[in-house]
Amino acid sequence: MKSLTICFLTAATAVLANCAKHGSSESRKQDSLESRERISYYDRNGDGKVDQEKHQYRDVADADWELRDEDYDGSYEKRILYGFAVTESAVDLRVPAGVKIEPTP
Image (cartoon, rainbow, N blue to C red; front, top):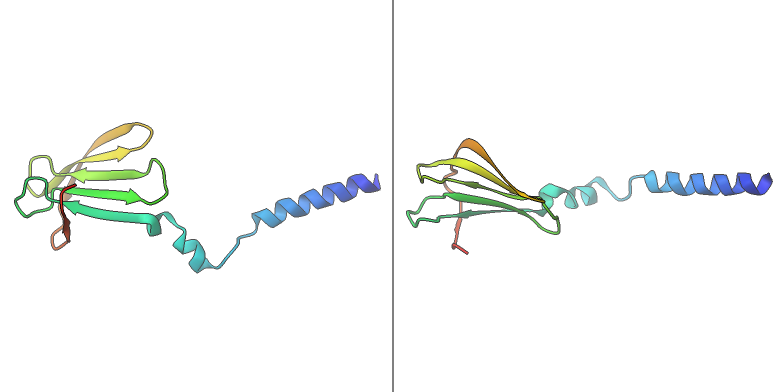
């Protein structure tokens, strides 16, 4: 009975130790999804205005997504999520101005 109690206490201690938060709040913030995000802006039709916004996450699978201005009128019409399957949804958002436009890949 004594050895069973010792085994139970050892297992409980190991489980509780793994539940504790490790590191400072700064190190957890650096490891968050927001810290892994890279936003790129593209001009697909060459008019000098943004019409594609890509959100990519370093070392994260199935999280990338983008916004597209399909009719080049200054508003995003489509949001595309690249997860297990490609999912498209309708949006109505203004295209940002004053951002750095990347060369088209």
